[in-house]
Image (cartoon, rainbow, N blue to C red):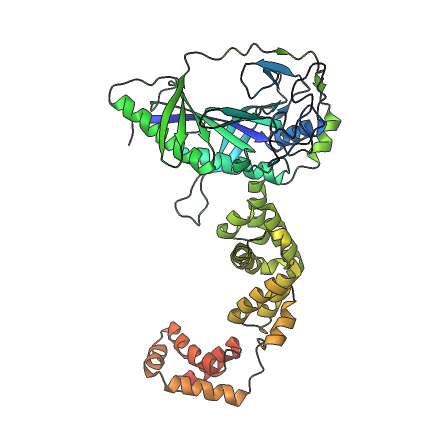
Length: 486
C-alpha cells in the first residue's frame, strides 16, 4: 500500500447548447467553414456592444439547480484580460468574484466488487459554476498558425470541483455523472470530439494522513473521459516516482498524449496569472429572483441516481438493468412507457428486452432510438404473448428482430411466420414424451433417484419432435406424470 495519496480537482468547461452566441445574435454551431460564424461583436470591431443571451443564463441556473448549488441573487460580468490570438478582444467576458452558482456537488458511483453490483456512492463538492464566452481555436500548420473564430463567443460554463477526488477512477466517475446530467437536462450535448466538454485536472500527492496540499500539476489536452482517467493515473504514478527517488514536484502544466500514454512539460507555473479582472462597463449585473428560479426548476428532470433508486423500488429492477437505463434518458423513458403498457409485474422482462435486444439492434443498424420503428407497444405486446404461452422465447427473439426491421406488430409476425405455439394433441404429446424417456435411461434413473434437473434431458427431444411448438408447461407436466408411473 502506497504511503502517498492523490488529491485531484477538476475544471470542466461545458459548451451550452443555444442557437446564438453568448453576447451576440450570430449563430452558435460546429463544423461550419472557418470564420463564418462571426459578426462585429465576436470580432470586437469598434463600436460593437455585447447583449446577454438569456437562454445561456437559464441553462447555467438549471445546471446549478440540478447540482444543488446556491444560485446567487446577483451576478456580474468581468473582463478577464490576456493577450492571445484566440481572443480578438484581448479579454474574455467571464464572471470573477460573483459567479452565478456557488457550492453544490456531483454524486458519483465507484466501481463495485463485481460489475453487476452497486458500488459505493460519494458526493464530490463543487466550488462554483460560472458563465463565460468561449474563445477561438488555433489551427497549427507546419509553418503557420491560423485562427478560426467560429467558436469564439459560444456560451461556456466552467464547473470547478473542490480538490476532493482521490483517484483516477473517481475522476472518471465524476465526469461520467456530470456529462449525463448535462445531456439529460438538455444543457449541452457534451461531445468531447467537438470541444463541447473539456477538462483540465489539477493533481498533487501528499503523505497519507497529511492535511496540507502538495504542489499541484495541471494536466491539459485531456480530450476524452478515458484519457482523463488514464492521464491522471499516469501523473499520480509519475509524482510518486519523483518523491520516492528523493526529488520534488515542480508546479507546472503538462500535456498528456492519450495515444502514447506519456506526458511532457508545457510550461512552469511559479505563480498565478494576473488577469487584471475588472467589471465590464457594457453589461449590467443580473438579478435572479425566486420566480425565475422556480420557472427553471420546473423544467429540471430527475437525476440519474434518483431515477435508479425509483427503478429499484417501483419496478424491482436489478442493478444490471438500472445501471444501463439511467445513463440514457430516452432509453429509460422508453422502458417506463413500455412498463406502463404491459404492467409493473412484467418490468424485469421488459428491461431485459430493452437493454439487451433493443440496444443490440440499434447498434447493428447504427441508428439512434429516435429513428427506430419499434415502439413501446411492440415490446409490451411481445411480452404479453410470451407470458400467455402463445410464443416461446426462441421464437420471440426472431419476432423481435423482425418487428425492429419492419415496425410490424409481434402477433402479426408470429402468425405470418408460424411462430405461435400450436395446440398440441394430447396423444401426440404423450408419445413424444414416452419416446424421449425411452431414449435416455440414465436421465430416467437420475430423476427417480431425486435429481430434479435430470428432467431437462427429456425436454430437448420433445421440443425437437414438436418442431419447437409444444407448450413447455404441458411438456413438463406430461413428463412428470409418465416418470411417476415408472
